[in-house]
Image 1 (cartoon, rainbow, N blue to C red):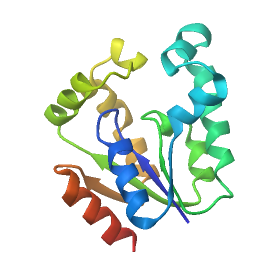
Image 2 (cartoon, one colour; image 1 turned 45 degrees about the vertical axis):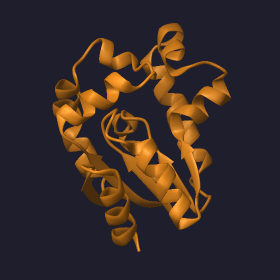
Image 3 (cartoon, rainbow, N blue to C red; image 1 turned 135 degrees about the vertical axis):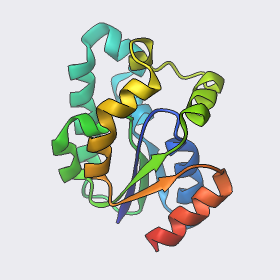
Length: 159
C-alpha cells in the first residue's frame, strides 16, 4: 500500500511525508522532484518552456510509475487533482493535507522553491478552484497545524 499526500502548495506534503515515510519504514517520493529528475528541468522551467498541459502529462506519467509499487509515501504536486484520471493510479490511501492560509503563506515565503502558478494566482484562489477536487480524491483529511501532531495523527489513522 502507498500513501499519497495531496493539498495546496505549502501545506507540508513533503515535510510531513518524509517523516511519515521514515516512521513507517517506507520510501519517500516528492513527485515534483521526481519529474524534475526525469525531465532534467525544474518545474518552473517546464511550465515556461512547454506550458502547464505538458507538465500535467509528465505528472500523470510519473504517478503511473508508482501505481504498482508498494510502501511509498508520495508527496504529490498541488495540481495533481486537475486530472481526475490521476486518482485511478493512486493504489493506496490518499490524504488531503490542509493548513490555514496564514501558515501556508508563511511556509511559501520561507521556501526557495519557485511555484509558477502562484505568480498568477493567490493561495486562496487556488484553494477555491481546487477544494472540491481535493475532497473528491481524498480518503481522509488532516489539518497540518503542528508538525509532530500531524505526523502522529496521520500514522495513527493510516494504521
